[in-house]
Length: 428
Image (cartoon, rainbow, N blue to C red):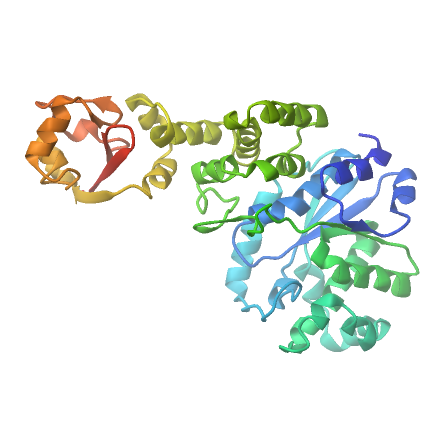
């Protein structure tokens, strides 16, 4: 992608909220380096972080160099931007763990070889030996209190109060920009629109301390069409770590995107080109019931974040409750995805040793699980051929044993199309 197409690309994808004047002209002169900072408040990034991540991805695809900064130093203070109360500070051990996990995730999105190779840096590396008196003398003297008070992140907290630690955050982040400008020739910082004040403090420090010109670029804060918070599900944040949000739940989150949001999210969070997305939008307008936008969004993002195997597992897991699936499909689904699917289904635990001897299907449906209220009801359902075990129809004389347990742990009982029950074998 030619350098001058970058701004148009970000704007078309809905990733451009504001930028400082002169950036397009600076880009026209040749490749530039930009960075985004990530707050290590958790041991995984979440889908809200995809906005700045995709900004870096497009920056690199346009021939420029990206830097991802993990906040080992700033994480010890806490960014007040967009917050009404002070963040809870984390211990050094927790911060170190979070930083290592986030760094590993960031390395999946960017290219780390070639002429515009990406880099991950930790601001604790240059703040660790920076003495407090040296910092306020060498950095603090360049920014006035009036300038810092003018920032929204400060003004919005004047009534509720703000600690000196949080007040100093913009100065610390601003110095990050100065350091990267000096050491890596970084002239651009990108982030969400709530970061504008912190970023422009950095550009001002570069002007005053280095006599240089630097630029701020921000993306809009993402909200859903219905006004609800983007990136949240019933279980909380939608994480990029499959151990925190299974690929199945990740896939389902995007599959359940509202029609009004699906095209917008395809632009923002995937690398699909304009022709492909516009064609999917046209298909959706002709037959909204087929939801081609949501399907494309869920498939593309799940594969991008978790890989082809995880996508296939998530699709099979979805078929368990929402479509056709076979016993073989159940056996091939990752256990974490099965657990995510079964989480909302009535279930019970039984000792694993119970299956050392085959169990009658009637006992299994009634006395052992309580799935059906009586043996008479179980016999009627079996006569109607409405009972399935692991998606396969069973007869009244069926015997269920150890070999029938899916992944060695589960039995999926089903009556009709929508009534499910999960038996989980526990113990040795």
